Image (tube, rainbow, N blue to C red; front, top):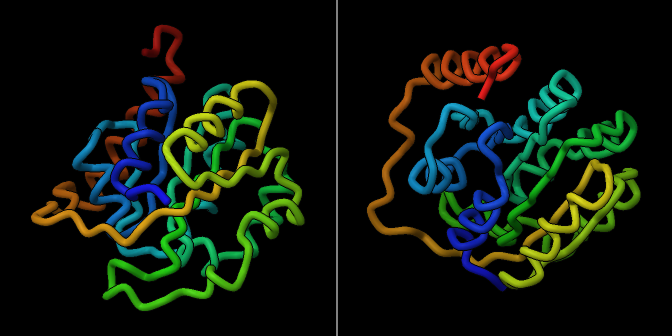
Length: 195
């Protein structure tokens, strides 16, 4: 098992400057924001279960660049219908990372059902090109490196612990600011000299 904050930092280490990232509501977005706030991050504030749907749309509309989505097990199970949709649409540039702590940590660590349901098996049945499970930092790095060797969509299920970060701030951008700066980044990347 890996600490969630460490898992997020490892994932962010594989997100390139031109890549897009969608993070789910709650602690995951707060930790992404604290680790590496950037225009190419879309923080899904207050909309649990929709991160993978948004990332799918982005991946289909931006096929030339990797799109990462970071969500928890609760968020993934809230929108299970999106997993087979991702498999059917075959976005080759999508990297779907589920941080599975078997709990709804942001709202008080109530247990989820992911201890009894295999999200990796659901991903395989849904048609993801690759499905990997990571139990520690080494296997997570290996899974992230492997996604560059063949087209996606890729699913990485990471077993993480419940690990509250004391004093971590909320995302300070308003939803409108998140939307606008993310849109501006996509438009800049589409420009001929986009960085």
